[in-house]
Amino acid sequence: AAVLHDIHFDLNKGETKAVIGSTGSGKSTLVRLMMRDYDAYRGQITYNGQDITSLTNEEINHTVTHIPQTTFLFSGTIRENLQTGKKDASDEEIWEVLDMVQMGDFFRQTEEGLDFYIAQNAVNLSGGQKQRISIARGLIRETDFYVFDDCFSALDYSTEKKVRQAIQKKLSDKGVLVIAQRVATVKDADEILVIDNGTIVGKGNHQELEERCRVYQEIITSQKRIDNGGAK
Image 1 (cartoon, one colour):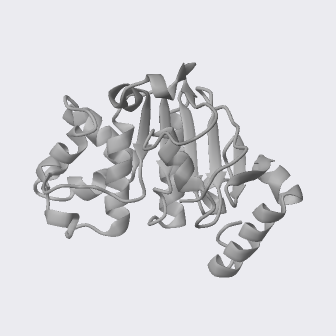
Image 2: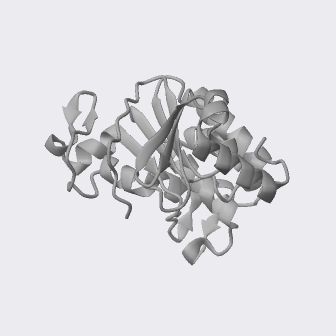
């Protein structure tokens, strides 16, 4: 994992911030520290003014929702999979989050609906579908903060945009942190932090960083080449 240094930022409820950086820049390390996967650091991480080291894992779990890039779905119905996010979630709540991630119609068209059975290792779903179900499971939870950890990577641009717009609407009064490698994923955030070699090398909105942050400019250029303009 990358070693982080001189990282400082606040995330308030009602704000969407984003962290962008290439592979190995330190994004994953930052998330692991925020989820208290390890405590080996100097400095302070607080949630609602409480030092993270004074909180139990359960308290952290009730404060922040982490939606990882790697999806963990078990063999069982779609209802059972989403209820791991919220035990007593009603069918209405489940349909709401499935619609937000553009998966509601997919399950409505099946005979089983919410009883649709997810096979072992979710082999009967595509990578993008699995990611969207994982996002839905995070959205059904009620916490103050949400960390979307590179979890849009398997979605095409138009689907991702619709999902992000739905998230923005639902979580408008929450603190949202989006971790990504794609500029298109972060460009609408209130503030973007650019991480390179474990430190913040740029801070600002998309337009500001596009004008004055070299690393951000390089990311844009490389993605324009790959996407042929998709990251504009």
